[in-house]
Image (cartoon, one colour):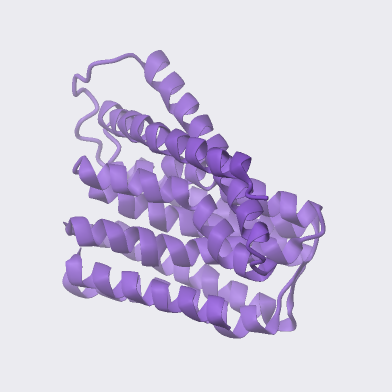
Length: 311
């Protein structure tokens, strides 16, 4: 029997995500203008934390339910999706310059954690000790951002922006909740539909669930790009990847050690690192990210998805 309830849930979830992301982006930009903090910093911290809540919730629940392999598949798949699909789409629509100093620090940090995670998984398991180490890197990342904010010259703190803190923060929180709940609806409905179509669980975790939990990043980044705030998109994606590797996988590993398959180690992890290095090189060499870079990322993402499904 066709799961009509799941199809309806998929539609409702997408509607919640799209509208929530619209309000969410407006509130984040307002906070950036009101405080004088650059939008890329807001993107790499507050926006990234909120948009990775679905990955965190799904991965920790999967680990708790003894489906720990789905936890790492979700996080790694989301990192690949963030760069290949999301940033690729944003760049196809609009190119933008890269602020090199902050991009270099956060880009190197992201790649180092990804490589560290690869070596942690070389024994085909991410242990609780590994989880603690990953969460320690999250603390280090927060300290780096905090130090960056302290040394930053705030130039627009007294800029007059319409609206009150109480209303904007309430909008920010409500929109975040709508995006997270919507993502949950999309994932649950999508998994039910996938099971109805007899799609294997490992393919679901690396593709459908990863895409579903990345929907907040996708819609938020596209919304920010359409509104001319592409730097918010880049900050959100890099920050979300760092949080996926530290907060999401680290938290899931604390609940239960995460088994890693040979295919994960030899294919999915290297592909994730390749996408991160490619993003770093594109941004570093040209000091901007443009349409051709977006097309390359977008096409390579679908090559990876095609290989995953067919294999």
